[in-house]
Length: 260
Image (cartoon, rainbow, N blue to C red; front, side):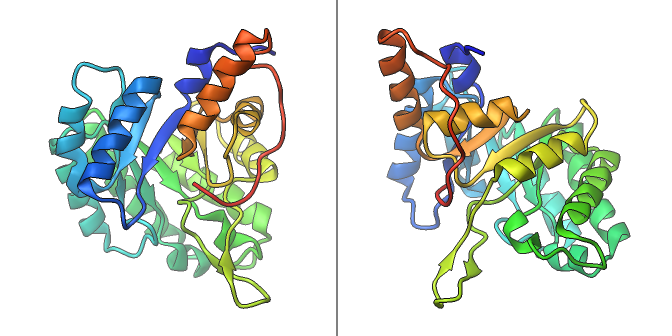
């Protein structure tokens, strides 16, 4: 299937979340997002108000992360952080589940945690993406296989009011056998699994591991509607290059590993 520039650009949540990013870098990132006319920027909570100003007059909306990146804030802290972000102009909220509570099979806690954020965001007309951090779930938990664990989370998040389920933060580093830390982020398997585990009402977002145009198209082919990315310019410049050569948004490759 062939996709237009807008089809693909409006899948991208341009990620501005690295802990070392300065205010100048955040502003430059918002300008880049506007230039490429993506769906949104996903930015640190303190910068939401300024991002709204930087993007005024464009079609790019502002999203904020909540309980990021490890999901360990108290539920009321997540709710209040959501309230503040929405007051500052955030139209989308990317929250992280309490991963330890999920692995403890405290499903009621997970549902209440997600519902608190969804209810607050929806009061302000904002939508919510719920992050599982699948790299931490590769061995399953709570007596469930990895796939069944993710299916369970999809069911809980849909019941709690989530608008998207999302694979990763882009910062879910796991210790490797050689002692280094790395992560996979979104995988084709997980995207297909999560899409199949939710009703059409709930969308799916990929994050981590999607670094090029072929990967972005693959996310679309697997049913994902959004993709967190830092490689926005490279992806969409490649689209224009292929478009000029008569082969725009058609090539389907694979999702890579690492890199949000």
